[in-house]
Length: 286
Image (cartoon, rainbow, N blue to C red):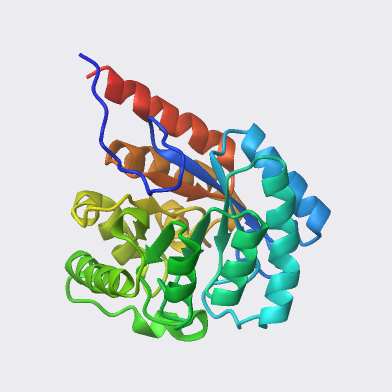
């Protein structure tokens, strides 16, 4: 008998019968993974379309690096980077998400065609974000976040990372709902790599059902992150660079899909698109 996992969906987004694939377009010169490759608007739009052709269901456009230690870009520059790319992709019929911590950028991106706001701070970085998203009536990703990139490694202190992340996300969900965003429009993200060390990330990946118990669709963003570099390092060698972690990323994507994640966010789409489809086929054969 064929079965499917109830992954949930955020109101206002398409429904997929499997874990969705969110492709990443970084319009930045300093992303940890692919900084500078898609900094030009034309190149960024083309890359987004290529990701869709490779199997991405939606594309997440960001103009500010959130790698550990990164400094913030100013608002005008973030707008200059992001809005034309969002507009170009939306004009081609792409389901576009905007990755930003600023309410003004979120609002301008939604006006340009974005249908999802992915805020790695969960609305904490900009007090105007939650009211802006509530007014726009679009879905909102609430990620677990403890502070800005420059000092976040100092905040990676936990007694029980799974319990603490779940509790802090629950508190943030309550605040976002109190701020006017309807629960049906919220997605949660455990924030792998944000104020977390490799053992913390692995523990969260191993306990995705506890995160799903929050009752909202779950986004897992493991792509090319440091913890995968640690996993792949042998005999004290230097961890492989970010672009050599795509097979490991696809492995996490398959695990996340198996555990009921709503979507996975990745830089290299093709392998993950295959992984989630295999996970769905196995699920359907139960």
